[in-house]
Each structure stands twice: as structure tokens, then as C-alpha cells.
Length: 212
Image (cartoon, one colour):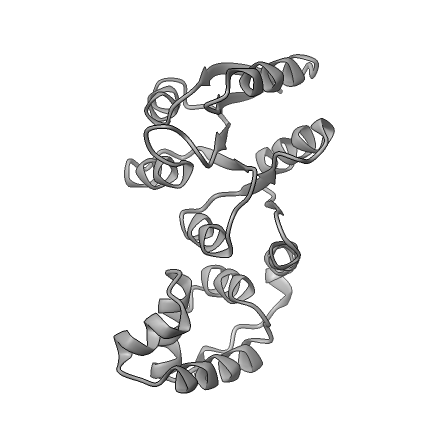
């Protein structure tokens, strides 16, 4: 079975390298190579690839914005974001937009191929920071975890929803007219109840268990 790809990166040398890499694999076919977000979105609409390998930094709009527009258009294509660096907030937003992979450009070429194969097969690949790797373990093990919605208060559920959107504790406190210390206290209780320890793990749990 052939895995059809669209590649998007604003550096032609990177695009050529990726195309050459996948040309060595008999089960891959590159349908389009794009240097902008608009080109990537058009290519996805035209070719409907199995996987879009998408640079997070593009000259017209970001990979996150491409992903957002794809979801608005209900384009059912699996996406791997390619990044030199990515913040936890960007990773959470990518998760909410159903990105299946986040891949650092510093990784060996063989890891890129392995990542795309895993994502194509229905898996998830997050390789950015230790917290993202912990989140990947949570996501993979989501069926083994028990959601505890009956133990989550209305206030805690509201805070969870805002955390998942990427707001900081200070921003949440301002929006809910609470002190920052109160927000931290609620988060501590949420982490204990859901058996998570980071915002990314919380976002994974919320998404997988549909708690928000």
C-alpha cells in the first residue's frame, strides 16, 4: 500500500531533502511540495494525501493556521508538524486541532520516516521536549486511564477548558475573577484527580476523555 504525502516547508533545500528521503522508500509517494501555507492548503484540497508533513513556520501563515483551516474545511488528512522549536502552548493548540505528530528538524532522517509511518498507521508521535514525550505516553495509554468526571467540580471543569485553550494561570485568574493562587490550587486538585502532572498531559486527558 502506498502512503501519499504532501510536503510543506519554506526552504527549498529542506523540501528537496524530504522528497529525496521519501523517494528512497518504496511505499511512499510525494504528491506535492509546497513553500507556503496557501500552497499547502491548496495541495491538500486537490490531492487529499494520507499525511501532510507541515513546517510550523511558513511565510504567509503558520502551520498551526494551516491546520486550523483544514479542520474548518473538514479535510480528513493526518498532519505531522515539523519544527525547529515549538512552545508548550503551540503544542497544546496543535493537539486541540488534532495534529497527530510533532517532529523536530534536528532528528535523524530515519526518524522522520518512522514518524510518518506511525502517524499513517493511526498512531501519534510527539518529539519536542520531555513534557511532550510524557504527553505522548499519556496519549498512547489513554485507554488504560479512567476518567473521573463525577469528581471534577464545575469550577475545575471551567479551568480545565481554559488551560486547554493555552491560557496562562494569570490569564485564567483574570478571566474568572480569581486570584492566581486560587487557580494554582484548583489546578493542583485537578492534576491529583486526573493523575496528570503537566498542562500537556491534562490537555491529552481532556481530549481523549471528552471532559470539557
